[in-house]
Length: 451
Image (tube, rainbow, N blue to C red):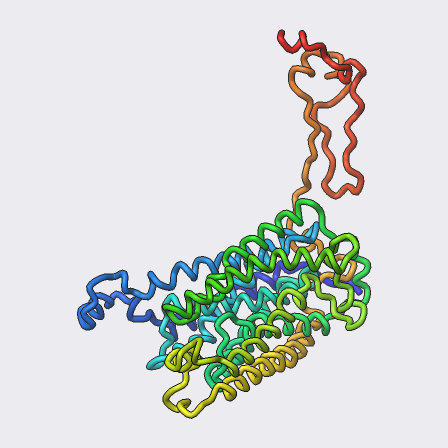
């Protein structure tokens, strides 16, 4: 089937309409929090605050910087492993994240920060918005290379909406705890993306199989993204925790877990594959799920494990470790939850995990069928994983360099062999430099080097 991938009319109109809607909604609903408002000096005077350092900005912004870098740089470059999809990996991740954080600020604001008819905006909001968009970046990994930017915008709109609803029910109604986002970010994002790509299954994707592999430079860029995520993950897990011991403990635990995971991954990789490589054929061959970035392994399974471990930890938390006040503080016991027990909290954690899975699966099916409509400019099966479908890609020129002194010394060579040999980057066979004359390959006496 031939698809029309020319987005000249559809993409600009969609982007502009969405942005105008965002501007109008922000103008109507969003106001600065008192700590970001011009009246902060009056608040300081009223509360007898002596220094601006006590402003929430100085506590939260360093964590925000780390999480922000993870979303735009870490996730973006992580997906550049496809040999001809680097522009799209970084650029489309940039696009969906830039739109997603605006919509997330509104959706999460209506649920969590709505006061006196307005959304109160502070540095905490933008951290939470980045968390929401991280879930969209996770889902992007499942459909990487197979969807158009139009589809990504529509997918992000619905996913952010579902994320905010799921997060509100899980954190505010079920009263589950999910500081690191095991359930709301990783589990929901992974299985939402996997369900969407299952609905969008392409039976002739084998025609693009040659572009699904990586090359040296694409793997190198993907490693850069991996390192960004690895370095900043302690901030990601601790950013939304309570100030003090909880945030401190979350950062330390993540730091140590990351270090241990590197050695464990290398060990397991060597055990399960005869050449020490990772392979993931099961999902596509058995379940008809084309998981480009392997998000089932990267986020889905770890998210479920994290949710289960969180439930067990809550159910069997010991006063010897936390102290009674510590348990009350960590799990929010008190007030109307004064009669809650640790086992009840463990059940809440399990219910939260099941809710995230249900929202991801049902929402993914609905959104998948919406994205399957032939109006979004998606590429044909044989053109997937290719930048040039949606990007103006300039051809590279491979040059063979001839040292200047040799060109002058062998003047006869200059008239028969060009200094630069140009080849299109799309050539399958790499350029082969011409064989130089025998005089150029003959070893030069050491005395000649002195002169």
